[in-house]
Image 1: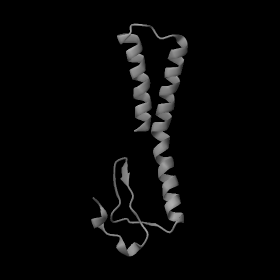
Image 2: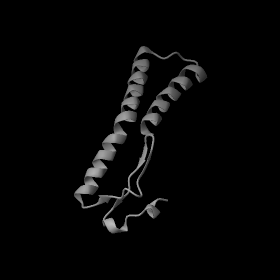
Image 3: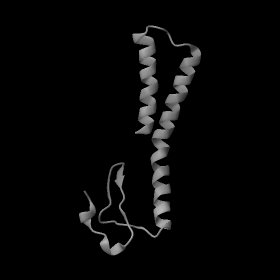
Image 4: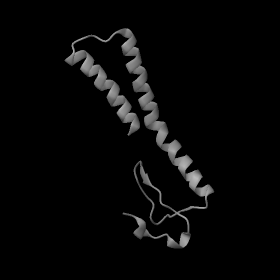
Length: 95
């Protein structure tokens, strides 16, 4: 969502600047907006896996285990449930 917000902000700036105010973008502003959009695309695809890996590693190093019964995944949306003790793991942990 952060990547989408970054891209939307840059595109909104361009739309407001060119269409509502009526001023053409300078070459420098156009380059900055393009760079911001590229950064947004990079963040969009890299941040979720990096955060997932770092959080999983952090919790596993602190003796938490993945509760497979309560964890779900649908397409790209993944919910991983960690528990400290495996005997409390059940499918009832899902909201």
